[in-house]
Image 1 (tube, rainbow, N blue to C red):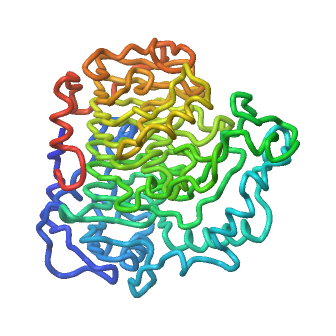
Image 2 (cartoon, rainbow, N blue to C red):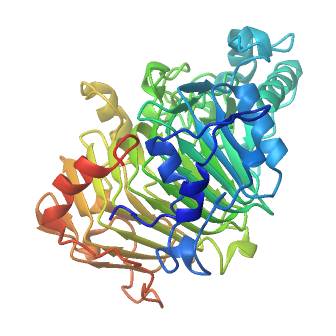
Amino acid sequence: MKRQTLFASLVAAGLLAACASGPVSSPVVTGGSDLASQPLPANDGWAAAEGAVTGGIGAKAENRFTVTNRKELVAALTKGGKEPTIILVKGTINLSVDDNNKELTEKDYAVAPYDFNEYMKAYAPTVWNVKLEKGRPIRKLTGPQEEARAASQSRQKARIVVQVPSNTSLIGLDKDAKIVKGNLVIGAGSENVIIRNITFEDAFDYFPQWDPGDSFKIDASYPGCQEAYVDATKGPQLCPGGRWNSEYDTISINGGKRVWIDHCTFTEGDRTDDKFPPVFPFPHNEPTQKVQHHDGAVDVTNEADLVTISYSLFKDHDKTNLIGGSDSRTSDAGKLRVTFHNNVFDNVGQRMPRVRFGKVHTYNNLFVGDATLADDPKATAYENHRRVLSVPKPKGNIFRQALGAGKDSAIYSEANVFEIKNGSAEHAVGNMGGTKFFDAGSLVNGKPLDIKEAAGKPLSPDVGWKPTLYGNNKVKPAGEVPAYVRANAGAGKL
């Protein structure tokens, strides 16, 4: 449901637009300025569990800005500090630029002697994986190429990562407002943040890291795979595993609290990860071993809490929403409370969301994808690998799993709709080390979701809690969801 609540005093004040250097004298009457006066009402999803999320509502004239580039955005966020601040985004803001708004690319960030081809040669499985440590290849890479890669990544990070302080509203002024090629971070100590009506695109990591031990397994179904190295035909270098990992989400709620993200669009843009295929030969060339240049769309980690993500569109992306970054981070227990409602996930691969520890309420969301090349749980890893290489790859991401029930998670699902080509309940819900999951009224390809069919070990429907934070929203029957959210989710649809 669209929020119509307005703060009349702010509208009367004109919500003076300003550049980063200070306010202008006349008001800007736009959709963006109207949105800046709308809070998330109390009890409307987990973000509003402790009261309304107001962001920058009440900002003084000197803390109201219209920004058109990175320099102005950073100046506005810095000047406002933790005081209520309203920032209207006009046009496209590229975060990977210098102070003159000239775009910075890989060659600008690279630190010698980094070279991607030399990096591949140094850490190729045939070189690096011949000796294991505690049953895995050594995950901490060493040597000049890894040192240069890390330095290059740090150089890029210093430029494209932008911190968002407390009591901030970041609002798209018009339908075409965009923030591209960067990562907004709502970190520990930041709370009461509103982000609305913005398209976020292409948080591209030029220097992803190869992790040889990620998903590594001594799997005898792979010819020649064994722990002890013998020669080129027998040894750990012929075992499956290893992944490329990138650094940046488009939005990282990394310890932040009371955050409302609404009517936004998240996409990889023109540089989708399927354009960067695996670079090592079999058995290190399955689709998940592509050179990953994008991480999450919106991730909620490191004791972040009280988040609502509503009416947003996630498209053309693989790893979308991670709630809780590690099974070992037990300090996340009791936090990571997140609501997802009335969102669309279109051509998305996984993590919609994948949850550890958190209480996550997800309702009236639409999930659309193609699971043709997803793993068959009844087949061996080797059989799945050979099959995926032999079948023509459908366009887009492989729909692997929507809702992932991880360690100590408690997901409460209501009236969600899964339209998964060649998919089933096991692609809608997966057991990723969890024990419980509840659903009521969801549909998978037109049939009721049966959690007993979820992949992995069985999940108990007793999640230990029941949602009460609906605000003025009503849970729609699943049959009404696809048309409604397609018409209303995403930037520019307010």
